[in-house]
Amino acid sequence: MIDPYLDALKAQAEPGRAEQMAAYHKQAREVLGVPNPATNDLTKSWRQSLSVAERVDLARALWHTDIFEARIAAGKLLTQARIKEDQAVWELLQSWVPQFDSWAIADHACSAISKRLLADPARLDAVESWCQSDHMWTRRAALVATLPWAKMNNLKPADQQARERILGWAATYVPDRDWFMQKAVAWWLRDLSKHDADRTRAFLAEHGQDMKGFARKEAAKYLKDI
Image (cartoon, helix red, strand yellow):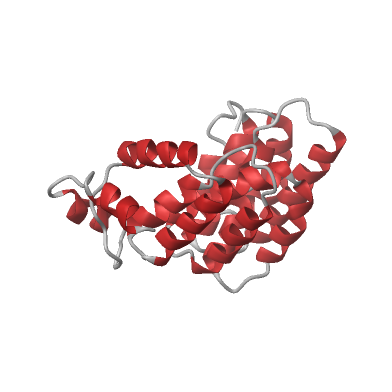
């Protein structure tokens, strides 16, 4: 089943691009050299032509190849707001999280995860358990996948509660000195500052002194008075 799709992906590779991408993304796995817009176009056409069950099967197969662009395509293939009976999608996406080892792959998969969380916010209970993982990329995914709650305006009470819950996770990450973890906290706060500047200021007033300098600066990027 996967061969025609993998061949279509490989056909979009640009000469000399694979080496540049492998170096930039620090990849030991195979990199084809496919630009992101080409992957977008391919996965959009696949989403339109395949059933949800077929997309889950294809995404699983693409991920299993361990090819850089194939894993990104797997995430894109499952990124959709409305999916009827999405439990199989949710379960597959969760199964990938412990395998994250690259920010680009993780971020594309987290984009798909965020759609499933918005579809069923009760799934935040599962995401909360990621915060205790020994795997840095799993802990990071808890914030990256919940970014939609940083960007909401006119929140309903349930969304306000979810936002505070996630900010609680972010607070527990502040002592973590890993660059990616500090960046994730800063990213969440930076996005939040565009929609709730006062809450961002309050977080930084309480925890900012314990954040790394670059993360504190990034979090306050759009706050004129900090």
